[in-house]
Image (cartoon, rainbow, N blue to C red):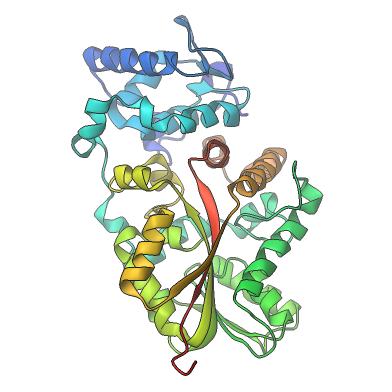
Length: 418
């Protein structure tokens, strides 16, 4: 882990990271009340939280060190969990094993905020900026802010398949040298679910860097793949040409709502998280409309418990602000209710494998840490590296705690002639 300011970390650039470089103004009363609430919540958890100059609270467990308690409490008191993440980016707190500490917090998320404040969440929690709605124009901007950061950055911590979604391993613990095979196993399971083979007309919503399209083409399918990321499209096209599949794969810079034609199969991997709840009906109707009768749709989706999804539906989070603007993770109930209420598709199968995502994220996080000097050489500063470390650890913790899960879905479209 990168050290914080007290251990010699570089201060955040105020031009690039204005809300990290400057501790927000907060009255002494607000800081004091926040400190009391935070310490009370943490004292009930299986953690050891050590405050610089202020003792230790918690029931024992992974260590979390608060190096600048005043700044830590000021940020949480003014920006909630967004402030908690920004405090990490600023180096005001750290942990020898961040995943272990964050897993405890993820497992007790519903208990961290007192019930009266939970009921008043709509009054105090920050709300989503209107310009981050996932309209066609908003989606292009939101996707670009994450996926167009740099192909070279993603290549530093992804395996050679450049697959940025959960793998499926044969066993645990997972090893880096088996990650590419585990990614192919995941892709092949989806292609098998969708019954993709020679001559299959495939629509892929969300290209990534092209690995699924390449494996579908290798089976003899004809693939139309849609992406909103120019960086991803450019590299995916290079990979398609290099593999000799340019006659079978078309990659279009196109919103899913602009798709046309009919296909035997639709495949979409971890795309629904970027759709936004208000557009879920549109997304699933698009799958239905693009599928030919008798067609199959195979999806991979991250999910969260339905109650937590409802509680946080309107909340603007640290992940929204710094990693995935406009993103929102559905519950399995939300997915299945939306499909039932807005399409003629039938749920045929759903398989969960959240533990595999935790291992995938661990491998990415370790690889990212190993390549920190190369990340810096690409122009990403120390604050960004702490941001990305926190993002990967935070996500891994969510899966280890069971707060997050990942599923592969198969939906089928009835053939009227059958």
